[in-house]
Length: 208
Length: 286
Image (tube, rainbow over all chains, first blue to last red; front, top):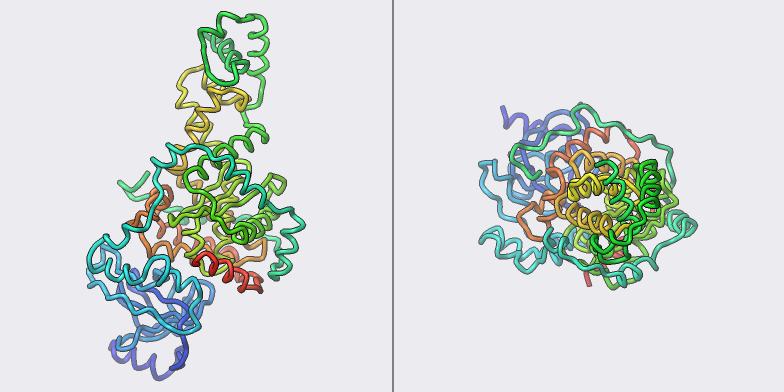
């Protein structure tokens, strides 16, 4: 039955990923993710990806992503919901999932990836160290310095830095020119209220 | 007791500019003057006047910058100020002395201080895909300022910290002129940046930030995309520990914003100039 669904998806409908199309991003599922033939809940179900499945991403439509599993994976290409994914690179599944940790995919080459992708998979996080980090524990991130509440509490004020920063403040007219140069068109939009289910309670025993 | 509290409250008001020496000050007390001042104080507003909000925010921003100094690239600082100032023009507090700073650290985080100072880290800026995501983060921080989340939380904490009737009264009065109360507010403020606002304030800033970004012409969904990136990094790294410790669970924020996104309809923003963000990010990666 599963095979039938897969074959149906592959042969009939469904978004086509051209062989030479380059991904714009990559990610991994964080829970079972339904793959549809259309970026809407009304789309037809092509198959379901297990938690932790790596995916390449080719297109965004609102909160839907057109994905394809990496070569060799017997899973359908199609549209999945952003909320079923982690983005940026192929991450291990959440600790609650029992699926095996997938090996991080190699960083893609080619012009379709932005500086963001390079920064995530390369320079900032250190993709090589991240790969070894997943294999060998947390040692790979020791070189990346964090910021702690203790440091903030013990901090001495730096008014020289503040004055330096305040010099960069811009006037509304300058900001307007900047917006015009970026094609930014103001909209009239009312504030939204929280949907009843939109503010989940923090987990018991979680931070704060 | 009430009288004593007024009296001491007024004392703090007229106290020496620096050290607090209660014994010394009591010796030179003009009781009638103190009582008059105390009555005025009782009638004063419970809200922090905007000039004092700005002063407190500058002091807190100076302390944050004392921990994470500004990134040295003027182009980066100017760019973030342009995006941020444009966003503020679509809020209810466009006239604050808004300014924005990029802190030169790999740590991932963003801070807003009362009165309109916003600081984001280079580590966070590097993780963004485009200007829409930058606008999403800045609009979230701007929302904290517009809704006075930190001012309210700091006043509340300072009252608890001072823990006496006198000081409680002072903390709700004209605060900036009083060194003891100022110290309490600053201490409560820095403590707040280490422990985080109430989760409800964070969800509120997420929602309002999406709307402010959309008003300014940005894609309101970009914040959700950035959050999925942050979720990929997780809390196991030093650079993200503080941010995750001071915010609601990232997945809960993503799910909450996904529900809000439906209310915003199909608006995708109108940004036409992706190059300018890419250039800034390239200069950060050098």
